[in-house]
Length: 438
Image (cartoon, rainbow, N blue to C red; front, side, top):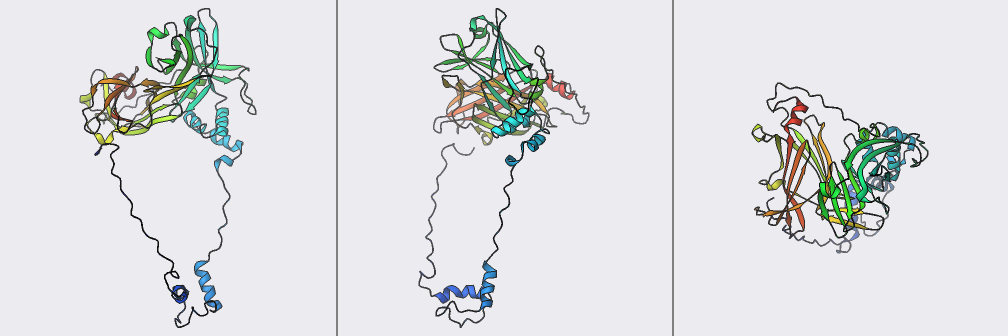
């Protein structure tokens, strides 16, 4: 970036006086109508239009009309996809995959119900188990669909006591007997598909504290679960999870009540010609969001790693370089994780949900996740001339890779800028995916 953000020069536009009508400028009717008559084919310029402008031949009238009159255009019937019958839309939706169905459901209420019927009435619920073996079932309370993930909230005034809870299970739920003419009933028989299981026996001691506001404290559990506890009470306020769209429909419907659906393993396609096979042509789609707010939604193409950048069991993919200020990216709005319950709502500053979708050179999903993360204030100060301010970092890691983000807060413009973004991909995953031996 060549200039400091927020210091763009302002240019003042120059006004232009409108020209007065010909008659108002003192021109006679002959001067006004003469060009019109000439355009219509009149050759006798001696005829005065000033004295009797209405007395010209019918032929001239016809010629003038042919130049300036056009038949009215009949409006075409207003055809749009929303006006189609539900049966036709259901037929169209039947060709869509899980990601497309979830995206379509965000358009409007009608599309949501139609896409939901195509997904066999899919919803999500959590089941908390206590020390006495009792199960507490919680139905989803709110949903937020984004480009590559869905965020689900559960809140209730009657949560079980946290001290006696042992585990939490996340299920995709579908009705066994689906009536297309009615909304799925929560009281009817339903099938559960286990998506994830979490240990709640030592929630506050064994899990990471993500952030807090005046009312709640957030705890993050891998993968992608967030638990909000009321401050000073050790009671659950809400539970939130973020699920990436990649094979979400399969994970939510094809598992059982006790066993998760196992994703099919990738069959490597060997390449003996390319000496750097598996090191280049990655595409990253990155989303940073919370609730209905989106702070960043961008795609970065043609990412690569040199062999010399492979170290400590990771491939390094530089997405945004600290030295290249032309690629530094601003975040939109004030970053914070929104939450709500039946009676309260709030926003935890500097927390958000990160969605990462990394595609390989054939554009197949290579590494996908959605997880709540936070920005932590760093002890170092920005050394960049264009970005003088406090430095924040966001770090995420799982078994397949790591994400390291460095941001600078600009007090002048009240916004964050991503000045460094690096992905570290496990060489074991790369070797298994491509059949290489890095």
